[in-house]
Amino acid sequence: MKTKGVLTIILSILIVQSQAQGLILQSKQDKQTASNITLGCGSYDLMQHLDDVKPGFLDLSNRLMQDIKKNISNQGNTRSLDSIHVIPVVFHIVYNNNSENIPDSVVQNQIEVLNHSFRRTNSDTTNTRAIFQNVVGDTKIEFILAETDPEGNPTTGITRTQSDIEYFGGILPYGQGQNQEITDWVNDSLLYNLFRLTNDTLGGKNSWDTDKYLNVWIGDLRIFEPEFNNYKELVYFGLSTPPIDHYNWPDSVLNNVNTYEQGILLHYVNLGANNPNNFPSPYHAYNGLVTSGKMLVHEIGHFLGLRHIWGDGDCSFDDFIYDTPNSSAASQWNCDKTRNTCVDDIYGIDPPDMVENYMDYSSGNCQNSFTLGQAALMLNVLDYYRPELSNLVVIDDVKNNQIRKSFIVYPNPTTGAVTIKSEYDIGNFQIIVYDNHGRSVKNTYSLDNNTINFTIEGSKGIYFMEIISNNRRSTFKVLKL
Ligand SMILES: [Zn+2]
Image (tube, rainbow, N blue to C red; front, side, top):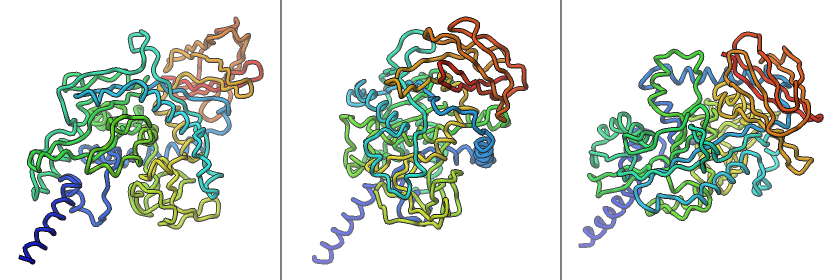
């Protein structure tokens, strides 16, 4: 009897442990030596999937990161300090039940979290350890809810779609012990299932022009497992599509990337810091760790080119950023400040693992920083690889109580002719056009108070236009096709 009782207890513990994890994470764990597989973001899994479908994708993506590093060092001083890239965001809320139909107030709170995080105005930046103070900074990127829809009509920047689909991760047709089948299903079906969120005819919502808006789809990303006690497994809090090189990559690769709509998928519980939903058991331990709105900060980091701070590998894998310390693996959604898993030399010191960084899997309670290297990379992606996403750059006139003067540059991209128009009556202004080597190729003045027309006569590529008005400067980038 005694033995039977002990066995029952052991079996119960095993069942509880395996149920706490779901079949997909169990199957992943069996394939890897690491015992610390946790829920995470699916952005790198998507890149690996694209590489499986089209071998060479990861190599192209890594070369793109190297190109960006080169761009940053060539760019020189063409970017003025008071330019802010403003990205219009549309949130597509796709819900099956009322609790998933998240109120506007949560979306608005999420925008606030994004802006504080990217501009480094969040109050918890004081928690950044002193050893990192000289490498962290303001990314000069802001977000607004889209104000006009693709047809030019006013919008709240939020769409709402009721869907028949309960679990966008899909229904897993396998049970315990069928690990190979489960792995194959994950490889073949999971991402396709999740991206149903982005398609009207598959129960989701079609994108708005992904070149001009940052599309964020909010939905239930869980997977239903009827062969495993109707378990509802969550594998990804969110995932993002990586930037690609439209101009230089072969169509065969681009076609595979284009299978997935550009943008971000986010599990509905992870939206905002004031979301009324919580993670139910067995995921309740994540409440408070990944529910501060910082998961979307992380995903936008990916959308703008950032890799995970541990480089998705051991100490020999880098995230292509010079001022982030390497680490051997992701944090476990904690704030372990004692870890220093890799030897680094950043400005002559070996800093610890940077749990303050948004691109770790650390708790939102300690995430409060992007580094200047990460900021430079994201800005470069906005200039070269997502050039239409932030074509409004405003002068951030901090000294005069944040009064902003906005300019519109169109068409962008252009075949040569460009119009720059001020939204306000600002007096005459000067334009200096630089090529991407920082050489001045045009210097001209507005003909009336608000508008200037001119032609870029150089070769194809990115140009920077510095606008000078009332002794203030701002820089726009324009892509010449
Ligand atoms: Zn990630």
